[in-house]
Image (cartoon, rainbow, N blue to C red; front, side, top):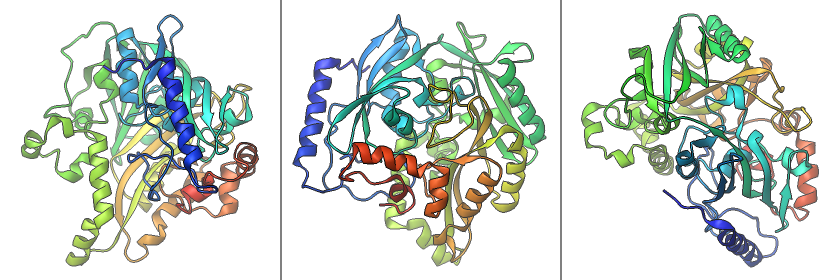
Amino acid sequence: MSLPRGWTEHQHAVERLQASYAALPAGAPVRLAKRTSNLFRPRAGVTAGLDVTGLDGVIEIDPVAATAEVQGMCTYERLVEATLPHGLIPTVVPQLRTITLGGAVTGLGIESTSFRSGLPHEAVLEMDVFTGSGAVVTCKPGDALFDAFPNSYGSLGYAVRLRIELERVPGYVSLRHVPFTDAAALAETIAEVVRTGEHEGISVDGMDGVSFRPGEHYLTLATWAEYPDAPPSDYTGEKVYYRSLQERATDVLTMNDYLWRWDTDWFWCSAAFGVQNPLVRRLWPRRWRRSDVYHKLVGLDERYRLVERLDARAGRPQRERVVQDVEVPVERLADFLSWFDRAVGMRPVWLCPLVARGTSSGGRWPTYPLEPGETYVNIGFWGTVPVGPDAPQGPTNRAIEEEVHELGGHKSLYSEAFYDRETFDRLYDGPGLARVKAEHDPDDRLTSLYDKVVRQQ
């Protein structure tokens, strides 16, 4: 388990970061010197950047107050390793081990507790942001920089320290996989659980689900438990977690295994590498059954275009990558899934309800304006679809963008986006972002959000 770094080591790490900023040529763009990423859009090659060495740990945990001081590059895997021995976890733990706390806050993280705890940035009590001017700015809820930071993806700076709320948890999780043949009935049950906090008289602490195909949906309801009522399952070995939803009505996991249940097989995406084949799985080292390993394999394919070349040789149509997470109001979930089946036809898809807390004043987060207190469902879908020579123009992704916003929803920006500038500014508060950026990055050293996510600069 990683030990807390302490305040002195943290200060030294911040000083190295500032020194690396000072060493950059005047006017050079400011980027992080990091090789890994959980983004699914092209990243410009980084030949020089900010030194984030030593900014990847836990500074301090207060078990009494249930808070933690955490560095921005700390992964949730490392954070959970430090908090769980105290019977504590972050209020929302995104599904993949190597997502960083700073990344989840400047981007958008979500998980099964989001229907009652909102999003990761809504548990932040204070943070230090390294801005484009080279200054470290401490901000709190209600400050302009703090409120604009979620969904800014580094365009306003990088979080180097965050004080966050933690949640007290026991050691086990009991699961109920509830089947539905009708998406409207599924949506009604989600709304009921959000409203009451329970289902059939049993409390619900976590809620997500999978739609395998039209007419086959499962809502997984998690209840924290002090003691297991059955031997806990292990899905890091030969068994595959998502398949268990179809195979059993109830299950038990340790808290740690529940938090990382999706990481082992990258939801279901490990199938693309043959890892779910029993023979391959026995030979594939357990330490390689991780989302970051699969992500690197995808990166190799993108670099050398192996699948594209094989498709071309076989005469198959060119495929468009469709890797997105979107949110739609719960009452429009059935409408979106019906449209998605007609227009895209990709399955399975992940379903994760969420209710945003809102800003400290109770308003919407300006750069991702979900209505506070309203129930949305995140729909995650990750794969490719055959479209032919138009694939580079992203016709499927563009259609998804239009449909999501027609239904009153929003789209995360960790992957490719195709909005024109006017639409983007309207959806993601472009004028507000520009005002905050002008204050904290007057020389425009940081790439703007639009240039990052649409122009891929």
